[in-house]
Image 1 (cartoon, rainbow, N blue to C red):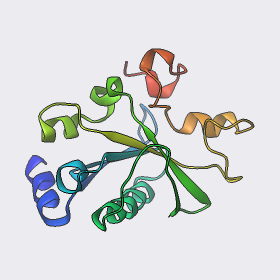
Image 2: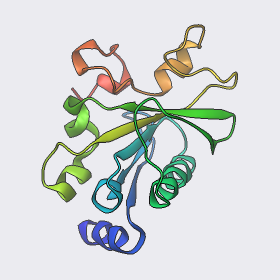
Image 3: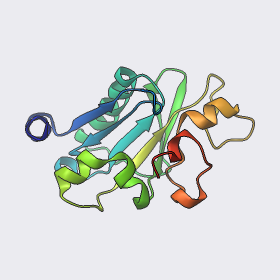
Image 4: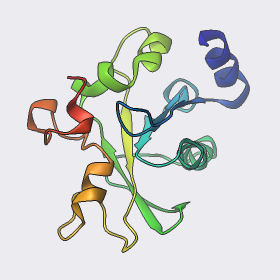
Length: 158
């Protein structure tokens, strides 16, 4: 796997790790190599099908490869059906829980990671008022320190 990641980073500029949903929790996906190749943060998204998340991360990776800067607070249209996505900083204390392969690639944190948060069917993001609980829980809030994150499926590995 490490060889495949290195080859993809050399050939394409990044690799996408896809972790499918299982009995432990929802699926997630994240990039490895964007920081190395393009000087932009790595990206992670959660709670959708792995193929959908793979496409989302590649869309944003293509933007970075074309010279676009990715940073916390940015909104991006056209990344996921149904509306905008918003990029949020990931607290370093989550890295060992979710980004083990990236730690192996970079040999140690910190490398920057942004969470790609996606909206519900009404266009509301997980932290917005009136969003349904199921949508709020479909994605972790990795911008929060682990000890401030609501207890749930995303904190089970802590």
